[in-house]
Image (cartoon, rainbow, N blue to C red):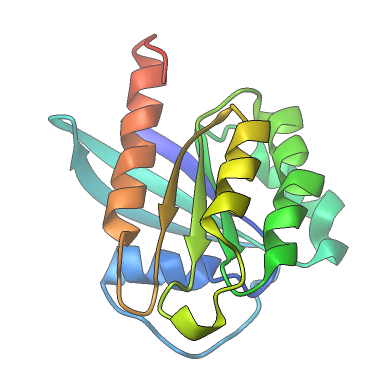
Length: 174
């Protein structure tokens, strides 16, 4: 099975770093803004079946908003990524990203990711902030706190989203 997923969120929240950690197992500290979209693939086994993830790294800059919407077509699931050190990045998920994805892709599994937990001294988004977000967005099925730097919870998040997609495809609820 092939699943197209997207990583959505503001510029600089660590979308590309999360993908690199998942696909290659490594973290690179070089920051280069994604222009448009970059596509990665990775094969994995989820719930006893083989899945090929087609992972779309979508530009986070607001200037790309109308342009990036076309990349959501055919998406089976999405990560909503925010930076734990930047509360505004969580606010922006509900301000534009969720609506943009659902307007194009429909009701698909969404997983919230709070990235950069390794910057513990700078974390500015509380557990309560995350709970409040999830309370207002019942369509977000799961959430993970991750670190692309250390790899904390990255594999778990990707496997969970793939499992949620499989559940939906098999006409089960998530």
